[in-house]
Image 1 (tube, rainbow, N blue to C red):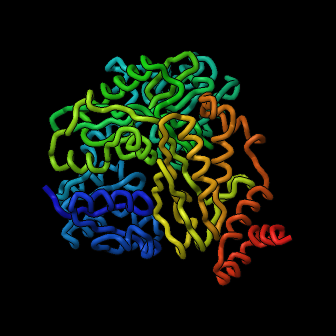
Image 2 (image 1 turned 180 degrees about the vertical axis):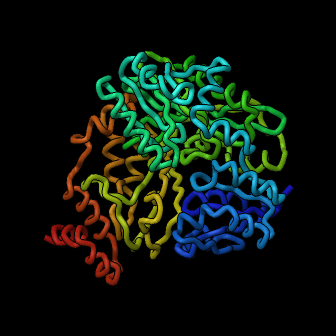
Image 3 (image 1 turned 90 degrees about the vertical axis):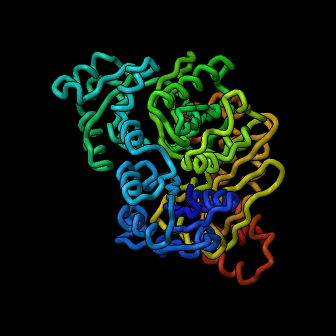
Length: 489
């Protein structure tokens, strides 16, 4: 049993974890770089401890410094959130060696499922579906020829990959060797590992993932699926549950497969098993994320289960508090990732100070945010500002609430993708439940919008402000200045 937990993360996920820990009566410690000293998570923590590093990211990745932060603060456990060290087996082992609980799976599980090739082999050997493929490590000399024999289209992946980095689609076998060489260079650049594997590429695939929970006794349950097919450059931007693609039988099959995979690897804690789903109803194992997912709130909205609370309970050695038959889906939930980026200019990252932040509210609306007014958004981290999660009795109601929430969002001082997200939600392919992972690339022109459209949104927001000083400040933002001039005229 532990009473004090150190949160080894930042932003919205640090604040989200902190609030559940406090509701459980636990003492919170937030480890942070100086750049985050005025963030909501740091301001709400019971205790804080500053991290140092050559860069802000380096500070959050410093295992020795985090272990020392636990010793200094007396924290008996660490919640890693997602990203940073959340799937780092060395971090889990270092904490264990220091007598500190890692709120997550065992280090050997992280290693097994974190290596895409080992995970793929593990899953295939136990009879779960994987796409036809070839692994370079099996015989490097014959890798290209074995890949060629699979036929096209092919998807080349770095063995140590993640986030879509280094992935290459091959439709012409004459380009295979060149694409393999490019993928290898990218794998080395992004991950320090040039090993590859290749799979048959599923045309117009959908990305379906299943939330699982396991305890120390080996009990595993699933909390149904999420669809994450709306992706830009392999990065998810909108997630929902239930998936509009699945029949009841397909939903049962894919969820039971995920639970079976988690059971086979002795999974402990919260994790996600991801699948590629084809147009004819086939599905293949993609990877397992051994941590909390960014999109976990949609699962919480339809099941009523607090996943962070369950992570903590399992880490304490407590059994799952429910059986599979106790977990039902109620209604529909959608999550939109609000980014500081300019969709009208090829999604150029936006930086600057947040001059006004007003999160949307209303029935079925949840906002997970880690920012506040006056805080600076820099290029040091991922540009996500907040997650806007909306629940409805039906999918149509969840979509309508999501669009309204995006329209009600006020963030002045830098550009966001709010209007772009609303256009995606209103696009016929999404509305009709037909979106696949290629939708955004295929519908670029339809979704583009215009600079004037973005500026109009800013002008409307400016019109409701009464603070003269704030209005003077936002005039320094060129797009807002132009928009306000148009509004006055």
